[in-house]
Every structure is written in structure tokens, then in C-alpha cells.
Image (cartoon, rainbow, N blue to C red):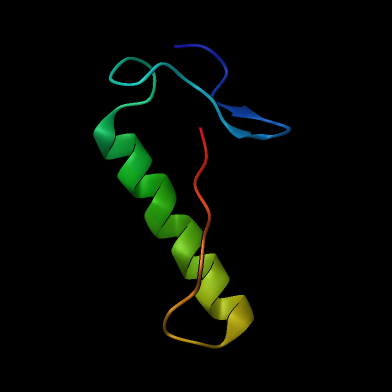
Length: 49
């Protein structure tokens, strides 16, 4: 497995280094951090390719 976290976000080949399970875990952690910072129950995140 190569380097997953870069200066611009999470990197990896889909279904390779970056598995669906890992993507879900990272998304859940990010949502938790955003919710704590924002104080709302519905934080907004933008996902790009």
C-alpha cells in the first residue's frame, strides 16, 4: 500500500489501496470532525475527483 494521505487529501486507486471500507471510515471520521466544529448535525462536505 502506498501513501494514502497527501497535501490535497486522500489518494489511492479505487478498490485497490483505497477500499470502500477505508473510504467509509475516512468519511465517517471527517463527518465527526466537521460536526464537532460546526455544531450542527448535518455538516456539508464536497467530494471531488
